[in-house]
Figure 1 (cartoon, rainbow, N blue to C red):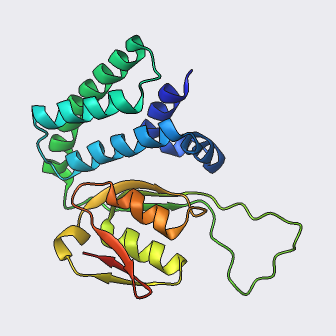
Figure 2 (figure 1 turned 30 degrees about the vertical axis):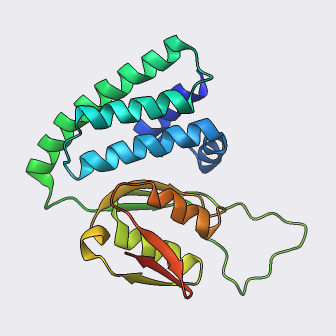
Length: 201
């Protein structure tokens, strides 16, 4: 199974993969780009947004540029898979949210906590942090969790953006700036770090 197929399978069933497997697949630049693209698409449908033909065409062109090294057959396969998945997700999510929107609870899976600052760590030992998976969690909760980890204060200036819900895999070994850039790739998200604060604008 190639890395693209593995990533798509991992995104469908994230609970079946370890943090090490997530780190390995997201270390590949092309897989990370594809993951970001698929996450943006999923988030758009989580908000029950309609995706126009122009947006699909634009994302398809972007995908072709990102994966120019793939053969044409693979690119066509991925495109067909994405369009089929989008159509299926649109039907499934619309039906799901129309019945269960009020009862749904966010799920935050914490694989392993970062050691407290006071805890001594032996110089020759290696602390391996596990990615944290935010599944249908509000941007407000995601921002506050990440800010707290980096010893920053979280400030929400846009309540509407703060209520957006996302699927996001947070690799704690990434710098705060890298995580902010990843979150800002989602539509309608604008986060900055200013004056020792993580600000949702």
